Image (cartoon, rainbow, N blue to C red):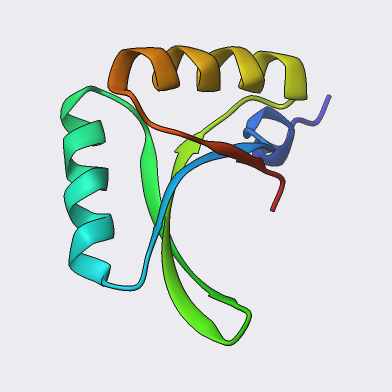
Length: 85
């Protein structure tokens, strides 16, 4: 029987910020890490602009990811969008 890590990894991400300044993204990511969330800062080009996006790990299905995102919005007052990289 073979198992791969990829099957267990979350597919969806919860984007809670997109910043033109890397330090702003790092500050938010640091705050969320203190709250024990799994966070990454991803550099993306959007419409010719360089953005530092703050992503929280979601789940492998949209419904569970939405549930987590709503809890984060309520608890930390952050707007979000669901990303499927």
